[in-house]
Image (cartoon, rainbow, N blue to C red; front, top):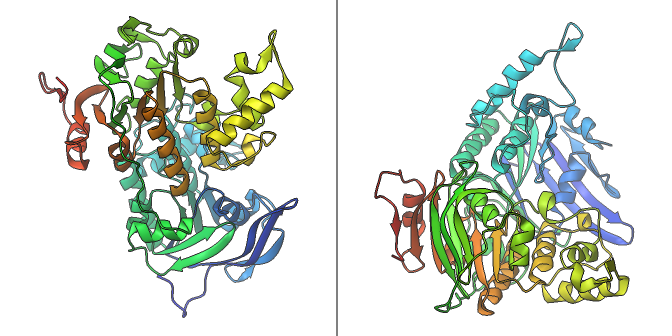
Length: 509
């Protein structure tokens, strides 16, 4: 906790930031003390990332002053911040896939010996950081092919290896499961005991109560509230973030019909990531898929969408076997996937919102094989409005908040009026306000008779949106629970279950 008798290690005073005519920060003040965790919260677009980027030297403020350990502080680029003892874990993965884990952990500051890179020493030191985080991988392995969760842990290892006196953690647990999150929190507590100051940004508000000492809430580029404790009801925090009362996060469940739309029968991954998975999804049903990191959830929906090959089993749509060999097969049959990593697989960041929406709907915006500009604009504008995207068609995707990027990904696929929508971590790294609107979209889809599958690491989310929940553990399904019997205990029991013969449980049988 802060104390008036101590001096902050970092201060921000009256910080403004503008991009052309748009002002994104207004007179922002912040104090960070040694050995404390300050949660910086707010909806997407509130200014959290801009503040973090200014502190870490990625962005220059338009005006205002900063001090670091009592001296003026104005890093012109990240290297200056790192050399000063300020490190940052970015929400978006910034790893170089063709380098090893060790090379990524120490990129830009590889240790040398006798004028040459000390690869053995670098690998040994990186291995220590991986072990601190419980990541059982050799530091000499290339990053390419690692899961999103493993890549996130490598990003965290990079920051831990900096020996920084201030760490900014931007959504560090977005891709992590419970076990990995616990290990990270143990490291945060250790860093606190060593006097490291930490700025912690997360949309998982329950974990804020576990890890933070103070909370600073931002809205529309301003600090609107500061709490001297994190031991607060989540509702209090949410209402400070959104500036209004939040009566209920999840809309009421739509009632599915008796018509079966999707049948997955004995599906097994060619890569061995899941085995013998079977379930059905009815028209208008929201079907959740839960499990710990590595359970095979993402691999399963990628296979259903034709993105990954299967060894055996089938996918049937309205009784017809359409087991897709490619994403094109799935899309042609009305099965679309909103992927886990929106920046890598969902949007083309340097292209406009209109272009991103158009690329998945070429038949609606083209003539004789050529995209027609006015058709692209009209089609995109209609879907921007329909799905509540905050932006204009000509705006580049990279200029948008995470929540609005996700809405663009959803909009481009839902514009095709699909039969089945697969949503993999649909609210990962998205603020509470944007989450609520995405839940409304999911509910509306189900109400229109679409079969919806939602994969989520957020247990509250998968419980809140799903009519039924398939639980996976180590690549196998361990049960299907009806909404009425699903709770955090029953799901976690199945998520951590062994696979003894006859153990599988399906409440629908």
